[in-house]
Image 1 (tube, helix red, strand yellow):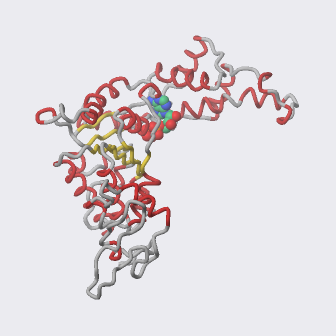
Image 2 (cartoon, rainbow, N blue to C red):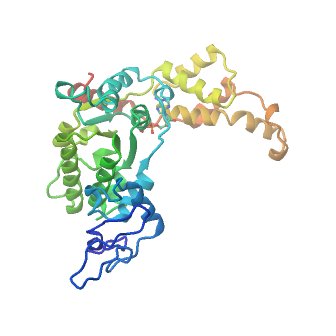
Image 3 (cartoon, rainbow, N blue to C red):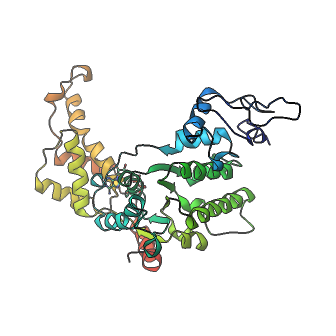
Length: 369
Ligand code: ADP
């Protein structure tokens, strides 16, 4: 039962522990001796950080919740430290455009997470939400904002890391993920690139490990779907057409997150420049930039602004001023010409052909077509 993490699963089968991080010897063996979990059989001892992490998950009785008892401590620790984000720090106001998506998401998932007492019976919400559309359009931001607005714990995992980085361990990590989430309700589990986990079954070609991973994932989803748990699963993908039918059905709401409109692009430019006090463009300048950035995603816009804001600095250095002697206040503001220069460097990352695929899929399966 030893894992690639060098920890013995069996040794953690019983996991009673004290509130102060001291492990209470779990079971009396026949000889009256006890097995000490800090020195598990055949595996590494739990270090202090793992113990602290498990401690935080213990209930008021000092016991680890039932769901976590048979899970590997190091995986629980990984979920708590790397995947869980207590403060996602994104608000609706940080997201440009997408008004319709924000409104629907508020009604469909934020309110139910805030008021489970009202949203039951006929009003019971779906537990699965799919956000699909081109990359860099704010899907992850929406996930974080949902968690922020609903005061929920946010868990972020990239499905491709589950299949690549966690080879063989992915299934256990998924169990740990759902286990910890159920102890941290209300919770939002955001699975990026969900298509790589729940792609259409290719029975012969499909690797045994990824098949098991997928099955485990669907089982976990089913588990909280039927119960009274306040867990929302958000899948994000830019390849919705590759999703398995069963997975698609479980993600009951499917929202298209398109490229930003001209107004949204203007908002991104102003917002980013204003934050840094670099904003001096006229309304006409902004209009021109917006016309020139048709087809740019939100993340392309961010890269564009970054590049343009280097313009004044490059200029100053070109005039022979040394970077160490450069006075910040003496730098000129960012101009339309800086944007024109940046537009040569930063090209749109999404092709028009791709957009057609999303729109088709939205018509067929989207919730708001
Ligand atoms: P996705 O998950 O759709 O691939 P992200 O939400 O990770 O994209 O967005 C990547 C970055 O692009 C964000 O951190 C943000 O800076 C910028 N961005 C994308 N869409 C928007 C938007 N609608 N409003 C503001 N910024 C955006």
